[in-house]
Length: 159
Image (tube, rainbow, N blue to C red; front, side, top):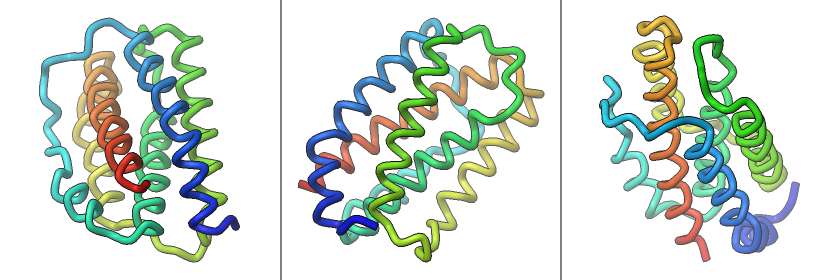
């Protein structure tokens, strides 16, 4: 496990680069981002709460959010019409980001329960309820973009 200080150096020098790569791929993998709203409210209060947290808690929040996003994209994607290479590259970069954040934290630390519950609702009320349709995946892509953009802001506040 790296020290949190070393992790801050990694976040300062590498997080933003990888983040801009996967945000670009997220835009390129499909058409325009849907204007439709997801039936699950974005957890703005969680982000407001974490803004005032200690650095280690912020790193854990970054890691947990990216982990939950990778779990969402591990579902039935047969109906997706996205560019396969861009999708694969997007998921690979997310995995790299997750590995680096994992190396910064103690495995004994518990994830944020409310964040986990939010992503479970997103899975249930969007993907499963809409039968993993292309429209459901477009909503997931939109929500994923919102989270990744918000995580960028959080990472930028850490240094």
